[in-house]
Length: 631
Image (cartoon, rainbow, N blue to C red):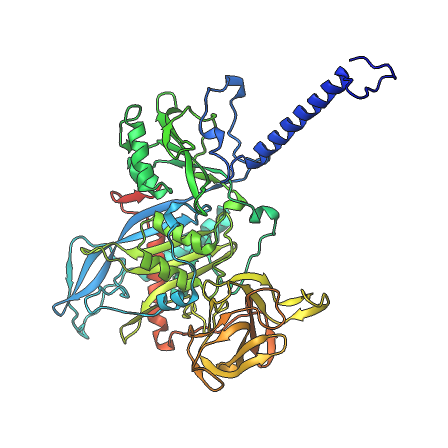
């Protein structure tokens, strides 16, 4: 314990100061590493459920503040207002019964919603994105003989009950009575002019009926005014950040009940599975026995990442009831998910000021693809899977379905109310992504074929697909100049690289004839297809070809021509896809491709009338006693 040769111990001698410093250094290191690990794992799927979901004690009043859901950051997360309206509207249609034209009231279902900004269990079992499946989903519909006629000039008339329509020739001697005399018209003009000069009013109003808006104007009317045109092939690319590639994070959703609604129905529409709903109802039966949420009630749902899937699951759900007398929202119950996957009663989360509209925190890591978001939104509003697949197929030729949505992107849908067998007919879909709105209207031709057309009378389908492989692939390299990954020199990348697993099927982008079907230096196994109107496509780095094909073979759009590989000058399995127009290379993802089908000119007046009728339905007030809200 005592040193005879200075302060440094030797042999078996020991210094208490040295020992204490060593132990303290070790403890400090352990604490620092433990704290760093705790912070890094908090809220992730490799750690237990975030402790905020289960509060062990109520915070002091002075500590009450909006809950910080950012997990790894103290920065304020943006919040977006969400819209989720499902309404019933009524109009009159004409149908032929036993040779007679009948007018009757017809209910329609109108959906206006923002696209889901988080993927939950609602869309967890959605099929993988597959271009060939999209081709099948967008085939024209053959109208059934008994289907009601929706393209009619009496569509939208206000009638009660059913009215039979009988057409008869008007006698030549019939003269309709005059609605206004010349004298009254002159007096009206004079009074208007006098008001202009003496009362400094607006410009004079003529006594003649002003020309009404044309059918085209009606067809392009929107809530924000008249739409002069629709931009095509416009892609809004958000700024790429590391957060976009991060793991899923937590976010909070706030819902307000617009009418009395069943609790279990609200939970199912917001990502709770049947097992979760049953567990929550059992947990709440003693503290909140009611199975309905009254008008004005609010839900706060905290979502977090699942350990078993690429979806968000509800970590915590709180119920608030509005006290009309005090004009405050009173907390009634909270359930929270434990580490063992059970929902138990918890304390109220930190107080916040509730917004007037439904809101959801925007977490960049949680934003789903356009494809997944449409599935999530469609199922939330009880659309059947076939309808959701058709909606996706209608826009998949112009929209990159694998791209992430942005907060505020929205969708509008109009369909007929379910019939006795539960069947509905899709009439209209409007999809807004960024600043671009795409509209497609249902229209039937004389041959009984029904398809969807944009305001210019063109279908959304293109005669070439932009990502011709199963699942669409992952974009690894765009068209344009780049540093070559092998030669490290700046060269023009003549196509796009779509990464996928080796052996993934590759499809013909469109109908055509194979002109090249063998190895080519750099491209490896390569196929070139000649299409009509000077279009050509090329497919490189294939692992192998499909038996039975060769130069001169005719292929159809969606037909398998080979499989993804890494032959030639390649750093990994992917498809190198090129498009040429009249021998010039173009960007496959941004070039404007011709439409697959254009409505014949003879149908233009009827189609313009159909657009006007549908736009009128989209602008109508909902039926007074038949409103349903998808909370």
